[in-house]
Length: 340
Image (cartoon, rainbow, N blue to C red; front, side, top):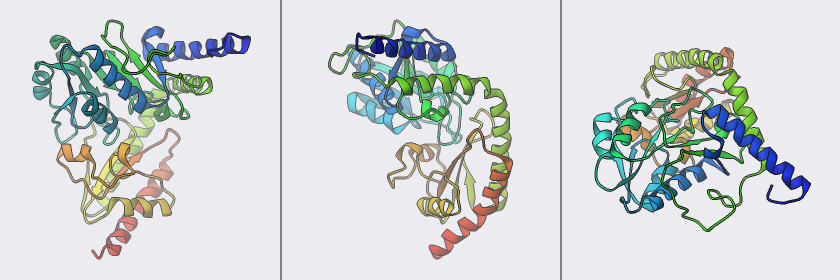
């Protein structure tokens, strides 16, 4: 798309059309939409650019304790991170958030719209109002919620992940409102935000997939919420010594996390995979490490032996029932292997 010949101009036009479609779907201006190569890159760039643009204000990033590892790492790398506690459902404590963002030296506030590990929706409007009163821009991480539930319009920067709404990997979205003070933290490039740009096919796929899932969002929400509630009820009733994380109100429709006592999470994941079910264990963004979930730890709930289930849009009741039939025996098998 950077070439001047006819094919290059057509590619640039397609890229702009993708940005326009994404902007319309997210309810913002086209010029506010920037395309990156990954959700992690979007979060890193947002934090770095605001810290550099507001460096005279101070180096502090205020974020909830359950943010993505990528965001927390970016804040620590470029500035000073202050985390705000959450309650046992994973929802940020506003009584701590408001004074936190109003403190001296705060350059950026960051809060996810929904936690991708336990599904809890955050009070984005209240958090944004507190940040606005303090004169601090708010970065909302909608990586787990875009395409699944309606997004808030109370943000100054918004990051969204097309891979989470069903698009192929290769493109991600960062929206930046006009008036947010930022500065490049990387060498100059034609693309002010993401040097090198993104592939046109990935950008088009992200835009088209988003339009498709938004058209079906209400029905998909209802269907998957019913299946999630069925899964939650059967896990709590049929698996001994289990702790189901999060609540049922104010949550994503498709995510459930539970922890089993006396069970190694990775061993349980492997046993379920052997039986034909793909689930996660540990924090979704650090699945390759053996560290316990920082999200569950911040919530004050059981951190080991945990399983994260995300229901795709085409999940059927029969598939959920079969998973629930298999789960108790899988847990028992892993416990026997551990000598329990």
